[in-house]
Length: 264
Image (tube, rainbow, N blue to C red; front, side, top):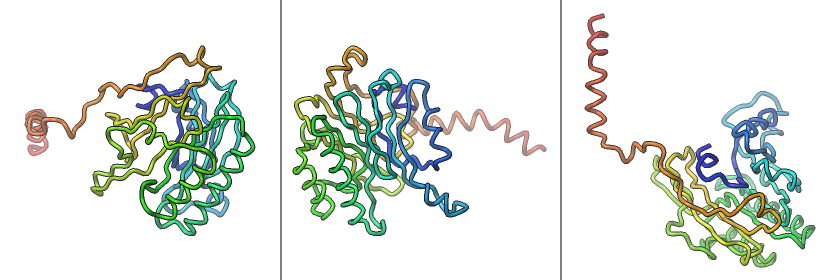
């Protein structure tokens, strides 16, 4: 919601929404200005009986409603959602993480299916973005698969076209770990004019949103020119507050209540 209210992107790719098929409609209630295309990763789990454990997976794409007449759904699955908007294919992807059963096979399957989709739309520009769950600069079979896929399909990494000041896209303060595992790939560097990693003031996820700006000539009159700017600070950040002053003010305000409770 903070991303919608501050940055107001035309297209939002989401991964791991954790919704069951019956709850997918909730993505359409996030904002009156957006419509969701996507699918659940829990359809099989729901069919097997009562749900056990935490929810998981799912991909989707939120589109500004002013653009929906130009949008068609191309493909949806638990690992990717692909839409066509004017002259662009947009794919939101979620690749398997470490510990996933048959991870390498799943990785290859996703890339193969995406390649088939790209081959069916050779005249369209393409943006593929999301959680790759691997640092593409690392030495690993997964990074090699993505690099080969990108080379074979003429895709460029947006972070290479426009290197951001901070490359980290995953930060977990509780686990004291951070990495770069979220990426955007584009087939049209000449039409991809900006890329950045946003450090929002209010972010409930341990992933930082990444944003890319592309030229879409047929929609310019609708979308209008937009510049990528950091979100304006509208919320207090406790990690930057004067905690000693906060504790003292809290003590002063709550001490009378403590006295009443002690008396009772």
